[in-house]
Length: 187
Image 1 (cartoon, rainbow, N blue to C red):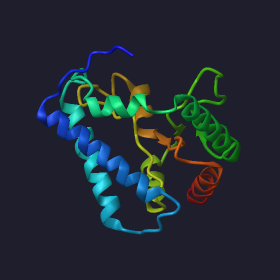
Image 2 (tube, rainbow, N blue to C red):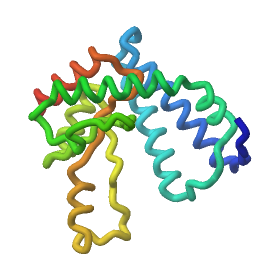
Image 3 (cartoon, rainbow, N blue to C red):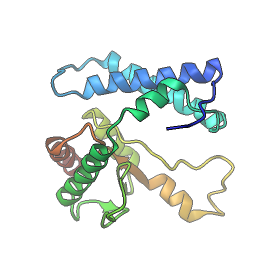
Image 4 (cartoon, rainbow, N blue to C red):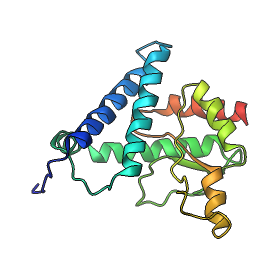
């Protein structure tokens, strides 16, 4: 595969490594074989991820892909990832049927979901409760300060009520059952 790899700045390279490290720690923290309630691991992951997100919020996204990130991406089994994500989405959708307002009511055949996106009032409370159960749900649609909520009320509503439930390839059916049970108990 021919692709141009841009040499990133030292600050960008540091953020890439921090992102990779935080995700490796998170993977270890979520691994069923690794029984730990180590708050330091969770704190490291969350702080590192916040630092990376803050960096990306304030820097252009066309900074190039560091070689290490490129090498990791090329080595992934994308077909398996797609199958696992789609299976997890369908499983969670069936388990939560009617309990939450899913943004997608059906999963189109050609779509590989990032996560299971729901829309609900009290999102932040549920998100905090899920985090206490080690289920970390990102918010992907935070409005920038430049967007006036009065001028764009629909965007503001989505920004304040949507969150993404994790369904990525590290999870299996047992994880989806646990996540669904926790969500139902916290609604």
